[in-house]
Each structure stands twice: as structure tokens, then as C-alpha cells.
Length: 539
Image 1 (tube, one colour):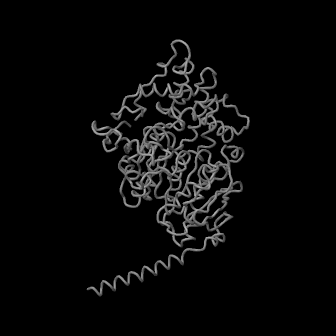
Image 2 (cartoon, helix red, strand yellow):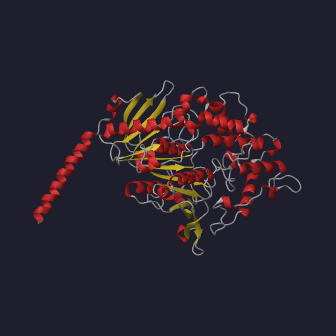
Image 3 (tube, one colour):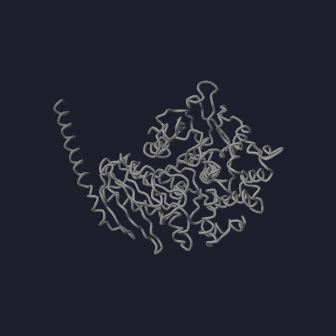
């Protein structure tokens, strides 16, 4: 028996050696990838990058702390390519392939805003975890949308074609380099990246096995109608503008008017839909001050919470929910801005309608008409930019898994939009089928894709969450895809200093699969997620 065990062990070593040798021989030299021929693709660079040696090229989106961000990135093969599916397309992609230790998985990277840049930090984070990975500028460079004026094919590239082409070409390069196709493919991104994520699930269900979509700007046309709506609310009448100095008072009034829905009064609004805050309660009784609102300001605030409606009174997009006003990522950045018409929503709204809808460089948002603008936006760009199709049956039948999340304190994209999309899928496929492949997590106190007073660290990005499925939503997605373990609740963390988690933990909170909500048990430390339960909430 002992001889048989020894023989078996030696045989195992020999066989393992053969496979190891085969894997080594299958991996090609990085530089040889420059000779690979792919449809309408020009490979402009294929180079081996030594550990810690990468320095991103100059561009419109410099990475803070460069090149220090990449000192701990292991050696990899870097491939740069340009993809031109149409005569007016120039989609730049970067594919990074670990020189050793590949985990046999591929991770696609998304974009924010109008895209136009490649997220090198996300590529580096993926390489450190052993993934083959890729990013794209979606066919243009820069922060604004001037590139779209007179270029409908570039709008399509931005809308969905650029990311899909990146995925297809990156997988081909991965297979050429390693000699084998990725066993699993994942996509995780937020904001416009969340829109891209849903676009992939809807249009190209075969591209990814697991998708994590955060705060998706998936109803793009109507979201940008709202951007103009809120800008007009605070600028058409100069007296209606709400300065940043009044935001804290509004936030305090909101918290005071909202019940402690989770059983803990900690200044975090657990579900803003249950709040009954009326801006009229803040009307100045005597002179104007930062602690009250004038009548025009109260009217503007009410309009922002209500959201855009057409002339028949139909809601075009959810309004901004109470509880998202305060903080560096709140209204003073996104909605009211440092001065009238200087908010980020004003920027995105005017850029979109100027360059993609009206196609007039001198277009004035003050001429905006909800009915006419909405119809024109839909007819011109909905097919390219909106990822609102609730029929995810092809993605489900491919075995795909989808996790959505959204911060209740999002001052950029109202959180109810993601709930609306989730509910539309349930209505299309039924609750049982939807539960088999889809989850939604709402995050109290989180702003746009991160930040805010709530427990905001749960593995949704390159953060410090432990890589276990209880604390890391991305790991939970992988466990669901690879082991069939559906994610239950996720434990999110709030650090004493979000920029430096080593300073310690302030609190933990459970994120419950929607429509469940967290509820304090009534005893134990309210800063410990273990003392909360997930219970049925409101849909």
C-alpha cells in the first residue's frame, strides 16, 4: 500500500510538471501580440512592464499620486489598441495581462461621466488580484461632450459599442497570450459605468458571467432632462437660487423630519421615501438667513424633490430624495453648485442637449421645454444610451448573475431610479426568476458611488473591504457565479477616516437585499451590524 501511495504521489508530480510546462509553453511573449490580427483593430503597442515600473501616459485625467499608485503592481503584459468598427470610430483600449499568477478570469473596467479616459487605477487593482483586465475611452477623449457634435457613430460607440468591442478584443488577446480562454468574466462599475453594466447584460448577455452595477445612469435621456429641470428650478428666477451656505440647514431639517426607521437616530436617513419633509416649514419668518428659506427658494426646493413632469403631469424621472443634501459630494457639488448654473448636473445636462440632442453649439438651456426636449432626446439617443430594457431573460439563461447597488444619499442620480429598474425586471420575469440571478442593495447614507456619512465600504470598488463574501459585494458576486451561493446580506463599514482605514472602524451596518431593510434589534452596540436584522420593507 505504501509503495502504491509513493508511486501515486510521484505520478502526480510528473503529471503536474507536464501541465506546468504546457502552461508555460502556451504563454506567448508579450511583444508577439503586436502581430495578432483582429477585425478592424490596430495594435499600437505590446510591451512587457516590470513590477512597479508602470507610469500612465499623459492625458486629460491624471491619476493623483502617480506613479506611486503603481509601485506594488506586479509585472504584466500591456497591449494598447485602436478599434474602428466604423469610419468615424477610434476606440482606444488597453489590455493588461499578468505575467504570472493569472487567475484564469477576466475583469472589464467601466467609465464615469462622458467617459473619454481609461481608468488605470482600476486596471492596476485588477492586476494585483490576478485578473486579465481591460479599459477603454469608448471612442473619444476629454471630459465634456463636444466630441459628439455631428458624430452620431461616436455617440453609439460611447453608448454601447465601445465597451463591447473592448470586451471582445480583450478576450481574444487574453486567449492569444495564455493559450486559453478566461474561465469567468466579470464587469463592475458605477454611474455611467453602471449604465454600461446594464447595457452589457441587456445587449450582450454572453460577454460577462457576473455584473456589478452601481448607481446606474441607465435612463440616460430622462436623467439629463432632470439635470436641466433642477438647473432651471434654481436659476430662471435669480431669487430661487439656494446657496451652499443654506445646505446644512436643509439637511438638518430633513433629518429632524425623518423617523429613525432602523431604530437608531444617527443622522442617516435609512429610506428617504418614508420622510415627510415639507420645504415650507423652513420659510423665513423675518429676515433672510442661512437657517431659513425665502419663498422662491422653498418653491425651488420642492420642485427638486418632485422631479420633472411633462405638461400632462406624468413623472419623467424620480426627484431627488431628502437626505442627499449635505457633504462634499452633495447638492453644493451636483445640484446647486458654487454659483447659479455651475453645478455638475448643469454641466452634464447642457453638454448632452447641446451636442447630442439639439446639435447646436450655442444652445441655451433657458429655452428648455420638457415635452419637446424629452421626445427629441428619446428619438435621437435613446437607442444608443438608455439601458432600460427589463428583459434580462437571455442573460439569466446564460447563467449570468447581476447585483445592483445604489446609495440613498446620491445627489447625482436619484436612488429610486434603480429601484424602478429592479421592479421592471421583476414585472417582466417574475419574482422567482428574478431572485435566481439578480439582487439589489440600497445603501443608507452613501452618496454617488461612495462617500457620505453611512457605511460606504463594502467592496464595490478598489477599497479596503476584506475579500470575503460577507463584507465584499464583488466577492459575493463571484461566489454566486462560481459556487451558486446567492448573496444574503452584506456587511458595510464606516471608518473613522475613510481615506485611511487604519485609523479604525466607526461602525458597521448590514446591507439587505431589496426590499428588505436593516432594523436594530433593540439591544447591543448600535454601531455593530451584528445587532441588526434584515426585515421586509417597502417596495
